[in-house]
Amino acid sequence: MFNYSFRWNQAFASLPQMLEGAWVTIQIALLSMAIGITIAILLTVFRRSGNKLLSGVASTWVEVARNTPALFQIYMVHFGLGGFGIHLSPYLSLLIGIAFNNAGYLAENFRGALKAIPETQTRAARSLGMSQGQAFTNVVMPQMLRISFLPITNQMVWAILMTSLGAVVAMNTDLFGVTKALTDRTFRTFEYFAIAAVIFYVITKVITVSARLLAARLFRY
Image 1 (cartoon, rainbow, N blue to C red):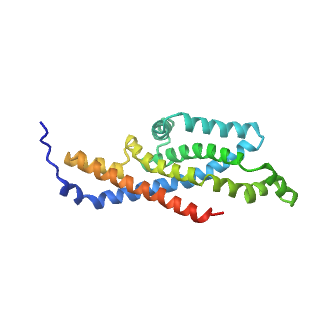
Image 2 (cartoon, rainbow, N blue to C red):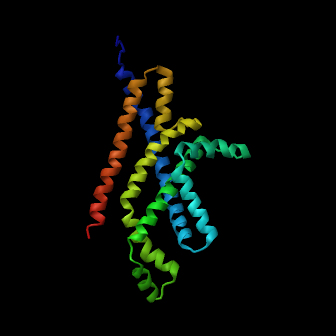
Image 3 (cartoon, helix red, strand yellow):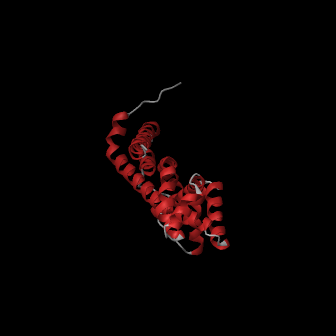
């Protein structure tokens, strides 16, 4: 017989703590995206370089990031590196793990975006006296990032959700970690995780709606 007694007042009293955790979640996601985009651009350059070693490194990164679980990647950063005497904090392990995953997916998105950019644009830039690197930086890369804008937004949403995987490395300051700690103390699992789910939903919805509005404003032509 269903006899669960809801205690929403108790759960809502802890909302400030959960919002602090949400801010940590957003910080990790933003940092992991900044790192991931930077590395993804480098991986894209490596794959186009013609150098077999650099191309091999980039392809391996993308294959591992896209074809192994994100949970495994975070676990390996925290516990795998620990086996070699490299001990990272849960925060740093989670950040590196998500950034690694972001870089792999974004590099593949960038590769697809490059296919939509005519090669004639690079040749035109070269004819104006630009080097290969200048042509890529000043002509190709801005268009690549523009085409990849919405996929980048999707990856940002995924990064927000991936922060919950920090539980496997005892991360306890993000939204999921704070929520789990509260449920462990109070045994009010449904109330706390229902609130956390709403917070996650609001964060991701704000990101997607803001991205669409920004895209409509920036890419009108």
